[in-house]
Amino acid sequence: MSAVHGRTVLGFRRTALTGAVLATALGGGAFLAACGAGGQEGAAGGAAGGAARLSVADSYIPLPPAGGMAAGYLTVRNDGGEDQLVKVTSPGAGSVTMHRSTASSMEQVDRLDVPAHGTLQFTRGGTHLMIMGWQKAPALGDELELDLTFAKSGTVSVKVPVKELTYRPGQS
Image (cartoon, rainbow, N blue to C red; front, side):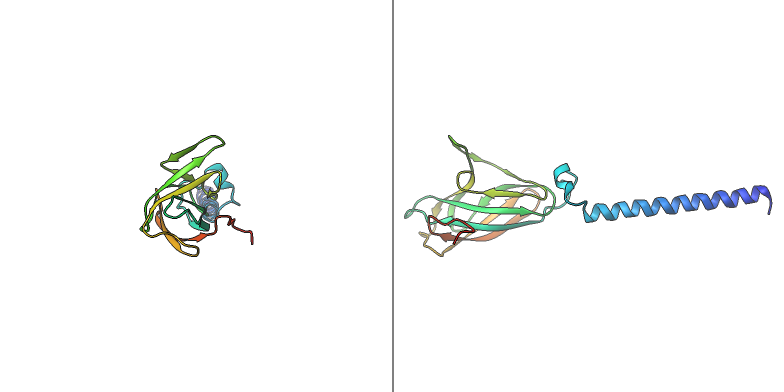
């Protein structure tokens, strides 16, 4: 084999080997990105562009006074990319609005962030729903359908139970 031919073969082998190593590294990086990196993406915003994976837990409505306005509480869990809750409606109520309470005021909000790999919590004394214009007076044990509409994920429907006024999730 000539020296020139040997260098060409050797150069080809190096190029092919470099290409194979690069393809393996890039392929492994894509696999790691698809599988996640230990939950750090949510904090760094790396998963912000991915699809949200939403679920609702701990939902309840304390029994309101007869024919009165009611508050609604729940937790939206997100195991994916960021989203926003933009609207809440109910076939069983005239209107459902989102509010945020502080120590001195309560304000209606048009949208609420659902962070990537995080939660949006509706709690007493904090962010909550106001439900008005009930189709029928609620009673303990009834369920009200709430349709939560998200900017990216569409609408999620949940059945929310009416509980006693003093009910708190996780307490017996």
